[in-house]
Image (cartoon, rainbow over all chains, first blue to last red; front, side, top):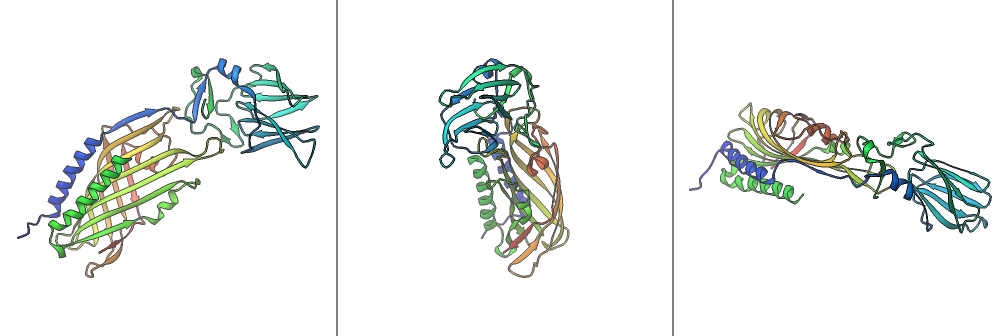
Length: 173
Length: 200
């Protein structure tokens, strides 16, 4: 004869096995670093914060600036694409200026003025084959750890800023 | 995640296997979904949300045991800088015992439940991420509108539950998803109004 049990007894049995499973699984909190939110020291920021590298694809275009035959296209929060626009039908990417925390740019007499978080950096773009950093004026702007683009912060998911750790940057170091 | 799938699998199997220990005509199975869970999904195309349950009805004693699962995974790609990254992942697995007020598995019920909750996301006031696993118990009241005479029935099952987690970390995450708002708390309350099911 088949043995039957009440659903209450069944619940108690299932609850017991569930509790064992949960206990086995463990409860508590485990912390880990957010790979999208990193801190770099001021020294590292000032030595590697602006870099001239090989041209790359534009993924998210920001501001566009035209200076003589040079087209400058901002990559939001990443840097500036330098494009030789001498032949309007065939623009040639010449370089990418990697800039940490760049929001704006201006050009005057062959010099590109950019912001890199709180610093103002000047680059000589007269010769696109040889772009040089000519000056960096430190702490020209106030540092906003939650630097904003429009109404949004780049670092909206990075939690509270810890000044002692340095500059908050998005993405891998 | 493997242990969570194993947990749900084990509980589901034990519910289905347990049906054999009860008289055949005395029990029926119910499968429920909350179609409005889709509203919890954010803007990112990879966002996922699901809420459902499997129930075992005891038609003689007018009671029910149910395994309920709610899952939500939210991504963010606000500026496309790093590609989508997970901002919140929440899973709540709860085991319920419900006793109906009437002699049928229809109408009002009251009951209790135990819950296992997994939360993963951005910590509040901190740049780090964290995972919290916690265990809680609670009580609930609800309603089932179904045909109990026929072999199968579509039913509607709103519920109100209140519970408390024990010995765990609470209020630690950014409230950037519905799951975090509901479960990253010491005392949790959940109103599920749009749950529909199929009993067979």
